Amino acid sequence: MSTNVMAVTELTISSLTTSLACHNSQSFPYHPCNSSLQTSKRGMIHKKLSIKSIAFRDKVPCKTDPRRKSLDQVKRTCQEALLNSNDPLRTLKMIDTIQGLGIGHHVEEEINVQLGKVWDWDTAQDLFATSIQFRLLRHNGWPTCSDVFKKFLDKGGNFKESLTGDIWGMLSLYEASYLGAKGEEVLQQAMDFSRTHLHQSLPYLGPEVGRQVAKALTLPRYLRMPRLEAKNYLEEYSQANNQIPALLELAKLDFDMVQSLYQRELAEISRWWKELELVERLGFARDRPAECFLWTVGIFPEPRFSNCRIELTKAICILLVMDDIFDTYGSLDELVLFTKAIKRWHLDAMDELPEYMKICYMALYNTTHEIAYKIQKEHGLTVVACLKRTWIDIFEAFLEEAKWFNNGHIPAYREYLDNGVITAGSYMALVHATFLIGDDLSKETISMMKPYPRLFSCSGEILRLWDDLGTSKEEQERGDNACSIQCLMRENDISDENVARRHIRQLIGNLWSELNGLAMTTSSLPPSIVKASLNMARTAQVIYQHGDDQSTFTVDDYVQTLLFTPATSY
Image 1 (tube, rainbow, N blue to C red):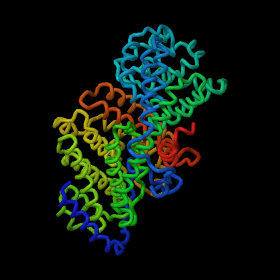
Image 2: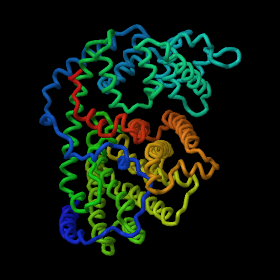
Image 3: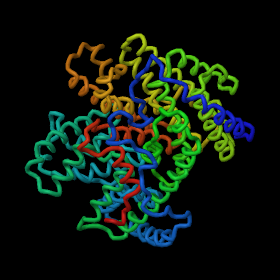
Image 4: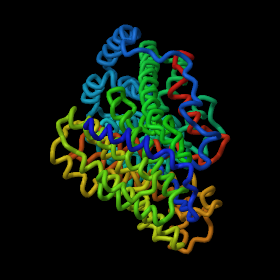
């Protein structure tokens, strides 16, 4: 970012703020559907969440953490324990525990060595062993074939009823089935079969297995937000009778050290946000840096993605403000002008904008160029054009929704969803992340972003649909734009909203099958971005699946749990 541009930012923003008090809300309030990555502003949290409302319990640790020496020692013990395991089933269970605890990034090489040893292990007729072997191999990128489950089918092509007596095996089969790809019918059969029988068996199960089954039926492990799952798994594992002490100790140290890293990142984001002063200067923008940061923790939980989390959170915070302009503040004429100015992407384009839009324009322009400068410096690639395209697409999609609202138009389901993936910020987030992470970057990477990869679209569609399921009721009460549920009902002549909601969930299930297939076959994108695409869909489900049910966990609760509740309390 050049010094001249930064100077212009300070001068322009300072000179604009005095006139904002005279700018009243317009007579045309446009209310689009909630844009997902922009945080859940409608009914998703109990109270306004802001960095000011979160108390830092302790001083954020410095980067030289005294716990590092202890962690390195315990890490070596865990590496040795894993490599010395010669029993295939014990090895698989240990890998499953390590990844459940969120400490797999410490022993990636050892996990791959051991998976190579158990890859061709003959599990015979052991349902539990077959399922966990398949799930862990596929989850970690090893070649797998779902035909391995056909040995459990009877002559009629159905899963044998005798399997239902093996509860742990059925639970393992159920968990494995969620990694199925499009066309793998035996895994769809496995899902239906295991889910039905696990539901039926719940009243007759003991406390421990019953709790595990109920939790899996609510949300299978494969669909859980990784860092949140690590915290929950750690709590459970600390009470287990068959725990491996070294794994538990490493998990506690890792969680607290990564949490300290998250706190430092959030503190940096908070300083940037406060210095930007958009909330104070505009008066209508949402103040949710912690909630925006939660999204990036969900998508990129590993410590090495620190810079990506910080910079992407900034972009999401800016997206939040832009959504507020299109949602509650700008007139349609102003929104047209704003979109035209963004498409020009030049400082002179601000001249015809209202004063409050000039502030937002400069914030977006400077933040994007600062991110592009960091990418240029770290990875030697010029990506301004690629980043700005994602923003131009967002503004055009916002404007399209504004026109729908103004004309009382309900779009076709497919038209709505294609546009909604863009306004959700899906492409913006994954494109920015691709370049911020910088794995295997080249000029070809830029060309791959136009059109956007189907992997990004598929993940974004899951995000958009979960957002709609979670926020639609309150939005419709306010008279907002139709979302996917209403579009689907109108297009298919469905009168019962619950029927439409069930259908949307089925569509999400289909999208997951497609996403799993893409994750296995996509070789043009680095594994880190493939994983991020999966994690974006997972994070959306965790955040939106309970809608505005205040008896369940809220976004505020997730922030407090992941960022401010230490693992050492277990």
